[in-house]
Length: 159
Ligand SMILES: CC(C)(COP(=O)(O)OP(=O)(O)OC[C@H]1O[C@@H](n2cnc3c(N)ncnc32)[C@H](O)[C@@H]1OP(=O)(O)O)[C@@H](O)C(=O)NCCC(=O)NCCS
Image (cartoon, rainbow, N blue to C red; front, side, top):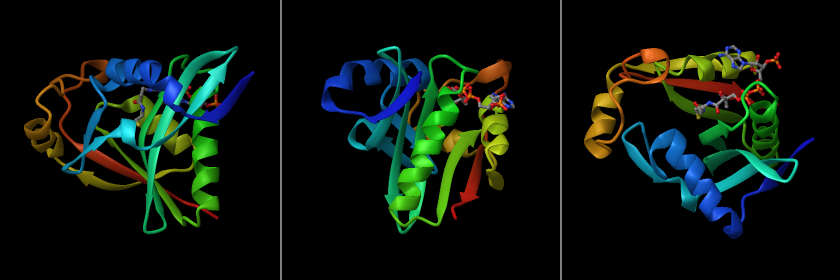
């Protein structure tokens, strides 16, 4: 049974290892900004006492932006449980909108978020070329062997 908790200081090492495996390190570059996600609010999924997923977010101007969402056991509802919880936090914080940015290669994320009611609202062609100036470690090739080039923004209105 998966349950969701806030990330605490004692999770630091494990959370960092997850960030390293998905994003190379704890620094994430989105829309020309660098975020050190270790300094942001985050939640974790715990399954049988094992950390099985994480999600970091920030709230500003009544909008919640998801900066990370990762599931260590795909297809078992962990991503959905984290997303549901972050949407609940956002709603309770008075947000009217939740959003995120992903890249053109991340077909899983595009499918996952759209299935959860998110709509594509913007395409930033070649934005990742700019991101690489801030974080040269961003690989050229991403998921499914697709070159990583563009950013896509998805949004969901909260009721
Ligand atoms: C995207 C991600 C978080 C999904 O997590 P997950 O634990 O596999 O998600 P769930 O098991 O909760 O899946 C939820 C639903 O999305 C669907 N889904 C998952 N991947 C999908 C895909 N590629 N296309 C369409 N739907 C998909 C599942 O079928 C499921 O629907 P169902 O409940 O009707 O069967 C996971 O693939 C991941 O960690 N990716 C790497 C990190 C990343 O790219 N994060 C997103 C950018 S922040």
